[in-house]
Length: 342
Image (cartoon, rainbow, N blue to C red; front, side):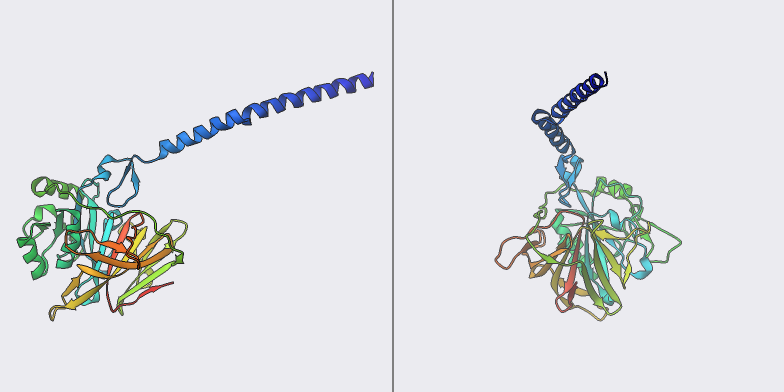
């Protein structure tokens, strides 16, 4: 009797094993493996963005980003202007030296972005007009400017100047700050201004892509002056560069660190124009360039033959380098200043 029970249990175990094996074969067999692979492929295709943002090279599902209308805003970078509003919303930032051993920003936005507060807004400089011209005929928001910049804005038609002196309705001043570090604008105001003054235009984007480089660089430092040191440190978890000023993290008005995915440093010849310290930056021509992305660096040269032409980058063999996609920070550094890397 006991042997008979054991035989029944053995048969039951064998049958259960065969049934389980059959289920496993059905579930993970070649036919269903293909089905799962197809499902994963379909999911990947569904997650693939429909468009490429023309300003950053990043994927986007917003059609407007594929051919945006660029807009430029001059931003203060004096310590009394900190923290800066809207700086992390800009898609591209241009930074260059001005009088006093400091730098100033020109932020490039898409006209259709929604941003409640951008500023403080500051005055125009002629060098920034050459960079702004790379974006067609953009609206250029500023408050006053150097004599050369104001003359160019009146005589040239490559940039649409929106000077707060004559267009105060598109700006506001905050009483909790002191002038000139208290002027602001917003996307709703510049969209209203664009309806009145804006002009559709075509423009060339960067050549986006990745470069072959193995030069690891996790930190970058530029000392524009002894008390005006700017640094970038690569955050490997967030996969972006975090900005430092005088050794401390540079925070915006939301208490968030200012960042960029791609940092481009170009060397420019700089000439002091007057006793105030105004500068002429020779950003049409050629010079050394450094492109930082993903904790790596590639070194080359930049070239630009006309104001409205896009700044391009090349390696030592004359092959064009790509600009890695992301939020871009473009830094102009005088030829004599060292770009320190670690």
